[in-house]
Length: 507
Image 1 (cartoon, helix red, strand yellow):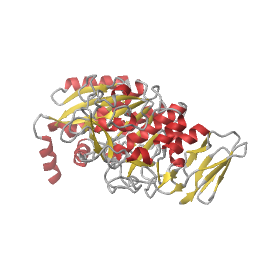
Image 2 (cartoon, helix red, strand yellow):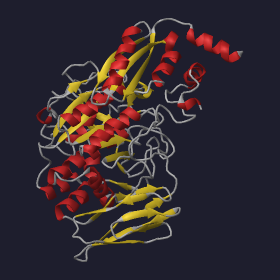
Image 3 (cartoon, one colour):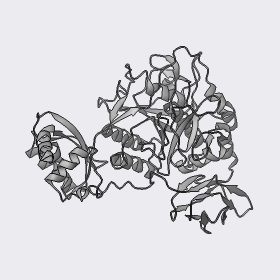
């Protein structure tokens, strides 16, 4: 009786469009079906946006018919999944207005020495897409390196950073960490001050933006030729709900675009906490924790051996703010663009480098610190550039966490085939002649490779044990695994199952 009353209470309400959802369709005929369905039920469900690249439509559903409409959508054979159009937020920390323009982070990672070794400070041919609150592209320290972008929040070609109480200029600050020119007296310099930056806005003055526009921004960056995407934002949602975001990152990965994401500022272990896009798990991705001036982890920085790859300076970081201002911000948001700038600097020396190779270089050359990441290290720009310029041999990936019986294909950067691989602990993991590593039992091992000229290189610790987020193509179910609510609200799922008990997640 209580369930029946609950059902009635939820289904009787105003016609206000309260629910926004993204619907993944499988084919053109499925898209036509969705269009016909919504045209015949305009007072209940409306299509408000379409992303053909992602095979997604955004629908608004009237609150009075939300559960019934979701059940109907999920039962259609042409619908792959339905997820809420949830909010993503800039990973922010308060500004310190009293700080001086002291760029301790640039000195800490030996940036000046890295530029001297490279003989340059980047290349205009390398494009970093800063997907954020927009960028003050007229800023005196940024303007020479800015290229056209787009504003997906307001759907126009003006991605100007719109400041507000919750956004002191987050995107502008991130852009400065990537590539401020260093040519303005009293200004600041980024890690790669001679690269190009593409400002893409999907977060508003309140620091938030929706899933639909985040996906559009990623696809735009890939389409317009960005080699690196810097993403200092995220949301704590289940992997199944993040499916369309993960698919967008996978499309970027497939095109060789490096995706660099902030680990978040909750002080949590990402191996146990679902955080996206940080936990995406794709080969070309790099997820970043923050370090302080003494190389300690700030209490607020997230971490994780399996899901966070490196640490970088992120506490009291001096960078650009809108209207030719400068100031300190803290967060993994600030550490992320520094790593994006380093990735851009490395690709400027060797454009063929992949995200997986750059991640391995950063991990094997990083300074050891007591911050729990895959390498327990903080990036060192000089050592990374030295490895690229000297063509030192590197095992790729350099660190990993695997489940027992899982396999991992290893490769070698800058070595001469044939290679001989060896595991320091075969009881934990074995490695075959072709470099296939097979996890056996919980523990750690180091993989050493010897090339045809007798040169050797070793991985960092390869861990075997449970991990939370699985790399590879996201599989949210079709439209949901048994017992898994795919639409984010257990109450709505319960009602949908009363209406259509044959839905997969109702079993």
